[in-house]
Image (cartoon, rainbow, N blue to C red; front, side):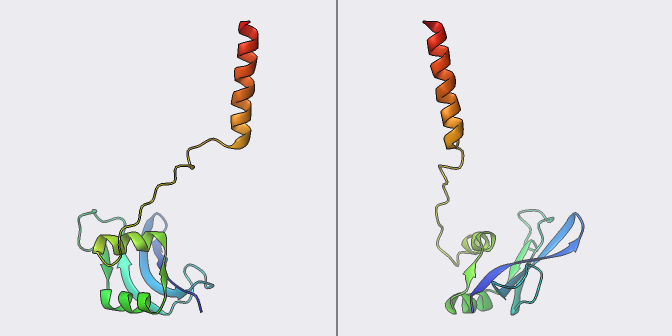
Length: 116
């Protein structure tokens, strides 16, 4: 069974509140989970201690069992010092696609031909 440590959304519309859970990766986001490991309230100030609460002992247990944290939970664990920081640089994200590059080259060729 592929276990993930992820967020399960709760709360009202426009007022999110998340539970940090260990769940089977095949289950829906807010569906059945194996164990609740903590909470995350994004509406609180970033320096508030109540913003992210985790039972680190149980989180470490699930990590030892082979559970993979999602990107957001991995950031929480990095901030808590449980995981080593990873670099997240996606240099190709801002790069234009192949067709956009072709259009730019075509436009430059037309401008060069018009200048002659």
